Image 1 (tube, rainbow, N blue to C red):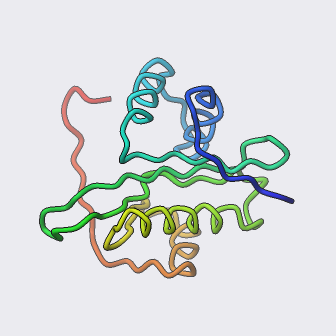
Image 2: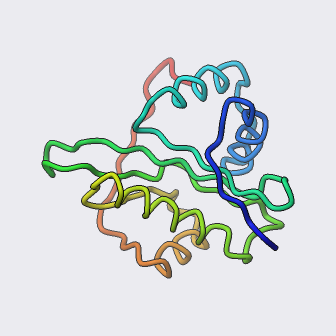
Length: 147
């Protein structure tokens, strides 16, 4: 199957929403998603790419570039990466990672990083096969009133 990777636009909101719901295995508030997606697309340091097969969404990757003071350099962070279940094993995730790594390199980033939930063992194996190392721990805390 031929896979096209292209920048997502506001017209792709429904496809991006569906892919993110697949990633988190839950539905999100559509209005909040739409506002956040539109705002992110205006940010020149945010990139959202869709992987399409025969015009149908197969996967998604989002990349955020930020200048980290403690690195004194740009760092690229993959914030979301998801491939639809029927497209897993076809190399879609690998192609999306390759795109993100190329974009990060072009932007002058020192490194690329990502986080994944501790229970996503298949994802851990995938990232390690692609050369990503578990080098940090990320700690989180829910804030009261946040949904």
